[in-house]
Image (tube, rainbow, N blue to C red; front, side, top):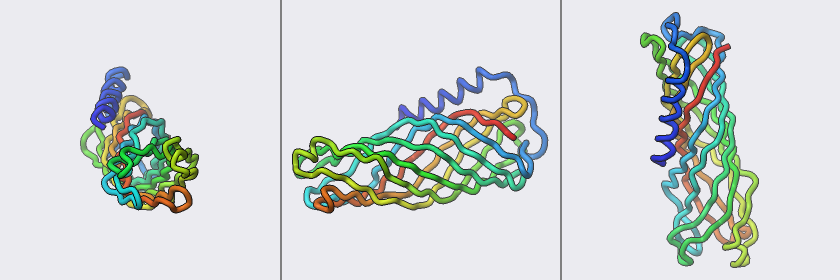
Length: 221
């Protein structure tokens, strides 16, 4: 987790140093009603694996960290208020640790987390525009694969239930030049899943709660 956060922070700093000096934006935030800001970021997706309950064998569910490309769009209703929607998908390796069978590899799964947040952008700081947001995320699971550990136990399938939960974020846009911005953000999604192994032979309730740390660039239309 620390490595992903450090990498994202370094990416933001390198981007800021590589681009031309910024010109001052106009207005309290530099944004106006009707503006659309499209961002492309590299995101570290860090499942928190905060709690789980695995039937039959016991233990705890653990999903791996990963890094993905992500695109998002913010539409500004006022210079301060915007709504943001993100698009991106991540692949995670899943295992059960501390079970009666030791560590059991479950397999891998793709997660599609469409997330919409309502943002407030703070003004009066020149080219530096911090913001906070809150909204809702839906975690869709697809592309499941089953590890050989499960197949050796006679369990040949894993299914995951869609998760829904709140999402919060804090970040900043830094006006670089013209319509270009640098961006850094941290998002926290509070959502889990119910995983069923072998058509219900083993059931796990896991609070995945991914933290997303991202850095990238944006263009204002």
